[in-house]
Image (cartoon, rainbow, N blue to C red):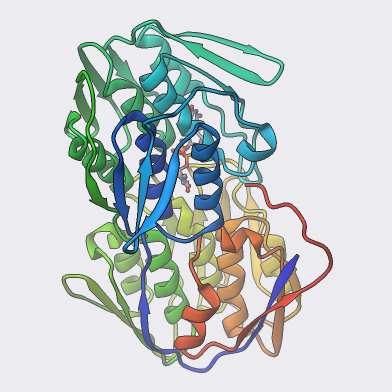
Amino acid sequence: MEKFIVKKSKGLSGQVKISGSKNAALPILAAALLCSEPVRIDNVPTLTDIDVMLDLLRCFGAEIKPCGGMLTIDCRNTVNSIPDYRVTKKIRASFLLAGALLGRFGFCSLPLPGGCSIGLRPIDLHLKGFAAMGAKIATEHGLVTIKAKKLHGSSIYLDFPSVGATENIMLAAVLAEGRTFLNNCATEPEIVDLAGFLNAMGAKIEGAGTDSMTIEGVKELHGCTYKIIPDRIEAGTYMLMAAAVRDSEIRITNVIPQHISPIIHKLTETGIQVITGDNFIRVISGREIHNTDIKTLPYPGFPTDLQAQFMALMTTGTGSGLVKETVFENRFMYVAELNRMGADIKIDGRSAIVNGVKHLSGTNVKATDLRAGAALIIAALTAEGQTEIGEICHIDRGYVNIEKKLTDIGVDIKRIKEGDDGECTE
Ligand code: UD1
C-alpha cells in the first residue's frame, strides 16, 4: 500500500493539462467488443480502472496494442466467457460488458456487482432495459445470466436517469433488430461521447445528450478512430484545489468548460474568479471563500463526483454551507476524516452542514473512495503541517499522474510505500 504525504501549500501557480475522461473511456472500451474490426482510440487515460477494463477485454480474446499514443483494440477473434469475480469486482463498470456481450453474442454471464462504499448501487434499471428488448435474465450463485436469441428494439423508460443503465442499454440496442426509444435517460457528456464512438463505428443513435434517445439497430459495426473527451471531474478537482489555496492562479488546459458549468457557477458564488476560453479555464483565488449551498443532481446539475471536493473547499470558508447529496445514499463516509483534520461538518441523512473553521490541521487520514481521496488532498493543501493520506490506490483509479501534476503547480506531495500491496476495489 502507498500513501501521500502532503504539506500545506502557498498559492498554486502554473498549468495543469487534463487527461482523457475515465468515465467516458470505460464504456467506450466495452463498446469495442461490439465490433469485429479493429478500432483506434485516442486520449485513453492511464489509470488502474482502465487497466482492469483492458484486462477484462483480453479475457474475451481482444488484442490490444498501443499505437502512436492511441490504443488499437482488435476484437475480431473474441470468445464469450465468464470473467472472474476477483477482477470484475475491482470496477463496477465491468457490468457495462453486459450490453456489449449481449449485442455481440446474444448471451452473457457476469458476476453481479455488489454495493460499494458510496451506496448499494443496484442494477435493476440495466436489467429492466435488457428484458424490454427480449432478453431472459436469471440470477444464481452470484452470477447474472442474460440471454436473447435476437434482441429487438423497444420503448424503455428509466425511473432514474442512471448513467450506467443508459450506457448498457445503448450498447445492447445498437445491433438489436428495430428501433429502441430510451426515455428519461442520462444526458452526461460521457453518454454523448459513447454515442459519438458508436456512431463512428456505424451505429445510428440520435438524441444523445437529451433525455430521450433513439437507437436504430444496424446489422454490423465497422472500425474507426475516435478521441475521448477530457475528464470533467479531474478538471473540476484541480479547479477546487486552486480555489482552496489562497492567492492561487492556475490555468487548466484540454478542458471543455461547458461540461463543468455548475462548478464554474458555484465557485463564482464563493468569490473565486473563473475565466473560461475555448479549451482552457483560469482559476484565481483571493483571501476568502464565502460558503454556499450545493445539491448534487444528474447532469447538467452539480456532479456527485465533485461533492466531496467542494465540501473540502468549504471547510475553511466563511459562514456555513449546506451540501445535499441526492444521487447516492451513502456518500459522506469521508466526512469523519475531514472532521479529524479539524473541520466542522454535521451530517443529517443525505445533507451535511459545513461550518467554516479558521484552519485545518494535518494528521493521518485515509481515502475511503476515489473522490473522497481527492477531497482529502484539497483539505491537506490548506491544513497546518503535513497530512498523511492512506489507501491512495483509490486516488490512482481516477487521477492520471496526480503527484506530477500537483508538483508542477507548486504542491509539496510525496508518494511513500508502506506495508504489503493491498487490494483496491471500488
Ligand atoms: C456513474 C459514474 C460515477 C458517477 C455516477 C453518477 C462511471 C464509471 N461511473 O456511475 O462516477 O458518480 O455515474 O453520476 O461512469 N441506480 C439504481 N438502479 C440501477 C442503476 C442505478 O437504483 O439500475 C441508482 C444508483 O444506486 C445511484 C443512482 O442510480 O443511486 C445513480 O447511479 P448511476 O447513474 O447508474 O451511476 P453509475 O453509472 O454507477
